[in-house]
Amino acid sequence: MDSKSGFLSYCGQECTKIPSGFCRMYGETTRYLDLSYNNLETLKGLENFPKLEELILDNNNLGDNITFPSLPRLKTLSLNNNEITDLESLISKLQDKYPALTYLSLLGNKACPDQLSDLEKDASDYQRYRYFVLYNLKQLRFLDSRCVKLSEHVEANSRGAFMSVRRPRVEEQHHEPRPSARPLPVDFASLGKHKGAYGKCNYKYTGKHSEGNRFILNSDL
Image (cartoon, rainbow, N blue to C red; front, side, top):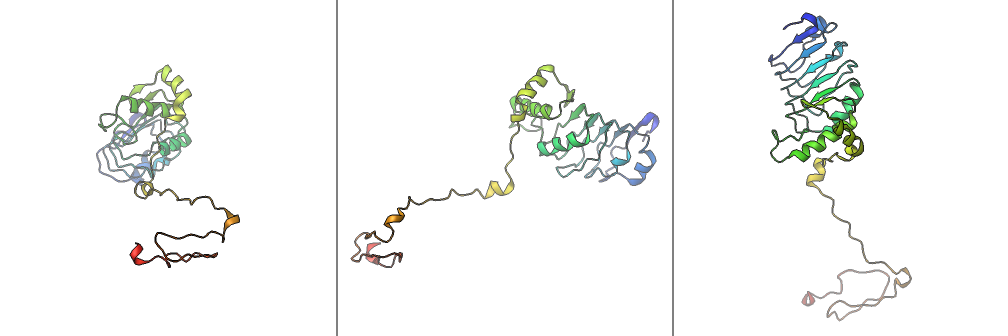
């Protein structure tokens, strides 16, 4: 652990949350914080680091339910190799909490469709992802360790809003709604006047109320 010049590293401690004593001791002076290679599932306590400009959270267990504390000075955020799958939700949170963010890295998360972590994705999938992120976080200058080109910003501004891929909800994946069956148009003027028979039925029914299969003989089935 080195707290000199506002740089603080607390890596490989296998902690699931940030120690409260750690926050009290170093929160007010830290500008750079590295919490990589832990088992973090929450970021509770980071609200005690108001001067934080760089935050490294690589190789933890942070998922879609993560809550980000407000850090108005934060410029760099690295979330590589975590458990984030919902890109839209993540971007919405970052927009709200980190207005000064210029560097973001999400490699190794399912939300980032790079070929290194998902063989089913290709370069076009990754580029669409970049356009979507850049459209929503217009101040970014680096994304996933790659400098953002001016041409990417131009393309993101014109097409990025349409690059989001909707993820089906779990219930939609297993319980797809069946198309509703609609009967033929009803002629209300003729209700109660129709006379008909089914197959070889020896009976015919005239009336306003259908009695279903009452007059269908077993030998006719």
